[in-house]
Image 1: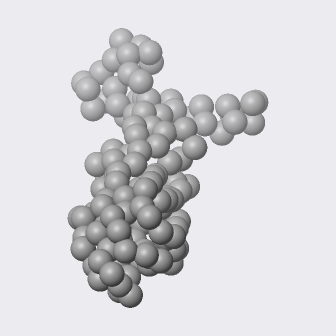
Image 2: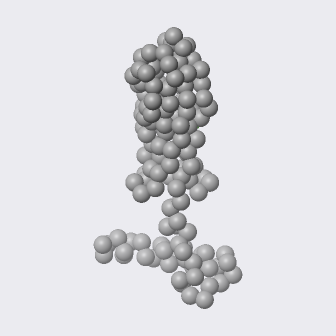
Image 3: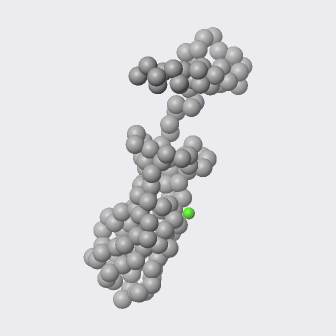
Length: 131
Ligand SMILES: [Ca+2]
């Protein structure tokens, strides 16, 4: 898209110039791949495994990082049930940290996925629910 190019090219050039300065100079602008476009996949930690007893809920303490730093705006996070005998209900399935409740005892595997639409990563946590 022309408008996309008009918006992004100056930033890409500036980023490349900065990267060249950091490296002590480049022969030309093709020596460096734009760091701002590296778009490395995030890393996801779904938190520690837990054992709870009904009717208790389980707090989910997820952690998502991208490029070793805090996650930027524009990323989405989704908790889903991978396996388990009953229904699960997330207080907010799109929050990194949330609370989950269970309809029946058993062993549940839950997954937290982070994505920006192009890259994604996920991690799973096991919750043992006692009746
Ligand atoms: Ca957290």
